[in-house]
Structure formats: C-alpha cells, structure tokens
Length: 188
Ligand code: DGI
Ligand code: FE
Ligand code: FE
Image 1: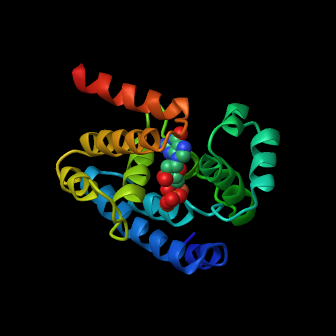
Image 2: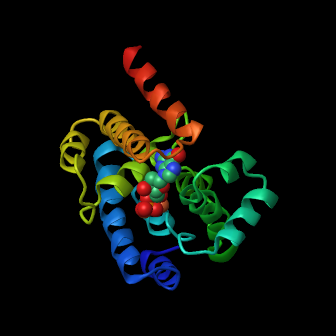
C-alpha cells in the first residue's frame, strides 16, 4: 500500500493530535531505516499504522486479545498496552496489510519483546523520539539514536520502566524481558 492511501485510512481512526504524532513517527522511522539498513517502505507503513487501534473501545480491544490468540495476561495489565496487539489484528483485517514484519512491528511497539527484529526496534524507537515528543530525557535518546539503535532503545525502555514505577504502575513482564535481553547482548 502506498503512503497516501495508508494515511487516509489512519486519519479516519485518529484525533488530529494523534495523526500529527503518526506523521512524526513516519518521518523518524524512515530516517532510522535509512540509517540502520532497514526496509524503508515497510518502516513507513508500520509507522503509519502503529497507533491504528488507539481509540477503539476497551471492550473491543479486550475481545480481540481474548479471541484472536494473543496472550491473555495482557488483560491483567494496563489497558494502554492493548492497542498494539489489537492494532495488529485490525490493520490486517481492515486495511489488508499482510506483511508479518510490518504486523509484528505494530504488535510489539508498546511492550517490546525479547529478540526484537530491526523493524520492531525502528518503530519502537521512532514512536519514542519523533519530533512531537517532549518529555525529560528524550533529547538524550535522540542524540544516542544517531550513534546506536540498541543503546537508544535501552534508554527508551529504561525510561519507560522508571516512568511507570514512579507512578506506582505495573510493568508488563515483556517490557522487563526486552530490557534484559538488550543488556545481555551488550555484555556478550
Ligand atoms: O501509543 P503511544 O502513546 O504513542 O505510545 P506507546 O504505544 O509506546 O505507549 C502508550 C503508553 O503505555 C506509554 O505511555 C507507557 C504505557 N504503558 C503502560 N504499561 C506499560 C506501558 N509501556 C510499557 N512499555 N510497558 C508497560 O507495562
Ligand atoms: Fe502506541
Ligand atoms: Fe505512538
């Protein structure tokens, strides 16, 4: 699917603010893909669709997780996590996207997972550092992203864990497993 057609589908699903965020993720994902040797068109598509399900009713998302083979433990953690797997399912069903690399990048863009693929890393990081993001520490991650995709990813995941813990929120285990996996690979 070409950019314009994909953007049109996504625009209908999102608020204007979230659509602007999506455009930022798209530009950032394209430049990370160019820098780190990822497929630029796939990165563009995954970025455009990554938050497709963000505004679906919680009941719809939890039903998808329950009935479409996703891990049910997600339902016992923050509902902010649900739009990623629900998005994967809906993007395939409603937009006809079939590419597993694109679909997995959407699926894992919030929690991460151990052994993330290059495409998954690009989308996770682009979501975190796109130009519309303004929070403490984001500029440091942007700077590191110019040098090392994995180092920047570790910083983003670490910041997210600390952010959640400061608010006394639960952390989905895969987020910790992603952090551990990346740290172990650095040690090797
Ligand atoms: O959809 P976005 O706002 O663009 O960003 P996102 O998909 O990365 O995440 C949405 C929020 O989910 C983010 O502010 C942190 C929150 N969240 C809640 N529980 C968890 C979590 N994020 C991770 N990585 N792990 C959690 O357990
Ligand atoms: Fe998201
Ligand atoms: Fe996002």
